[in-house]
Length: 114
Image 1: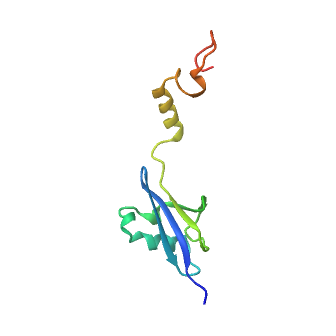
Image 2: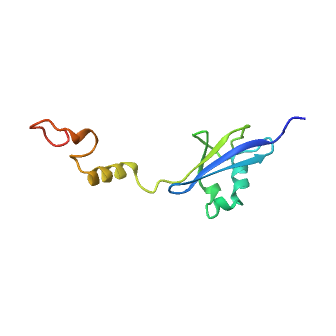
Image 3: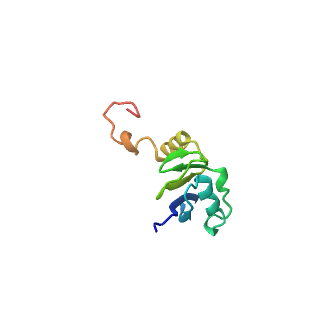
C-alpha cells in the first residue's frame, strides 16, 4: 500500500533573522490553510497568527484554499516594516556618497554621484 499522506514543508520568518522550517504530514486533498492550522499549535510558531499572514507555495503567492501536492513548500510572508526604497536611501546616506558602490571612483572634475 502506498503512503497516502502529503509531506509538506512550512517556512516562516517569525522574527527578523529567525527562520522556522517544519515538516507536517497532511491527508490528501489538504490546502494551505490546513498546513497552517497544523503548525499553529507548534511551540516554534508561538505568538504568530499564521492564518492572518499572506502565504505562498514555492515562492508564488497562493490563496489559503489552494490544494497542496506532495513535497510542496508553504512560505509565510510577514508584512514589511520599512519601505525598501526608504531603507536603501537611509543606508546610502549612512554609508556616504563617496565610499559606496558605483560612486566610490570619481573622475576629476565630475559632480558627486556621477
